[in-house]
Image 1 (cartoon, helix red, strand yellow):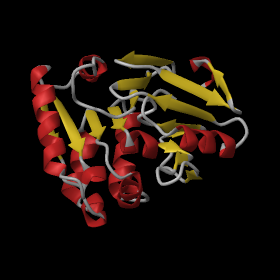
Image 2 (cartoon, one colour; image 1 turned 120 degrees about the horizontal axis):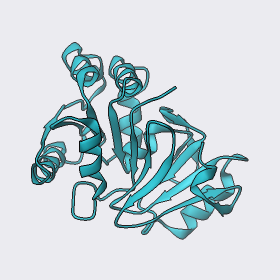
Image 3 (cartoon, rainbow, N blue to C red; image 1 turned 30 degrees about the vertical axis):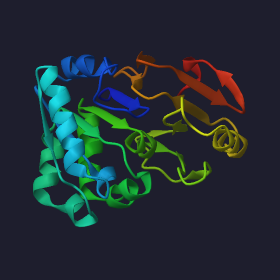
Length: 221
């Protein structure tokens, strides 16, 4: 089944080096990006939205924050309708565990999946990227927990260029057999197009692991 493009960003979003955002905008055909600062609910969500506004303005587009900060917000009809109508939705970094708890089994999550299946561009950075996958790397210790599963059998290590070596080793050691783990550097995106092809764009690199060994992008499902 064809979907919209997906961008899994390793962190450091909305700043120089994130060259992929201009391409995602062009692909979306929209002049507005809907930003969900949910993961940053306890870390200055307004600041996250402001950063997005400035960044996308430099690309000739608008960013609009949708303040889905707590669980009731994810079942609010106006918020659900905004996501369902969007052509480009971006989930910020912050707390992956909070983001998951707000969106899991919510009307807004259902709307996001529907929009993506209808061609909407979906991007998530750091916590946002982690939660979009299932299983999800638990940021508290590097083990695994349940993600939201927009894509399955892929897990993300964000900030891979600064991630603890010990935590990475623990993640790789605990990974289920056959699971692909993508270590994504900051200001870097692992991109999946509508046809399901994976590519890398941005300032850094992506390293894919499976069964403890490095593999190519073609190993990704």
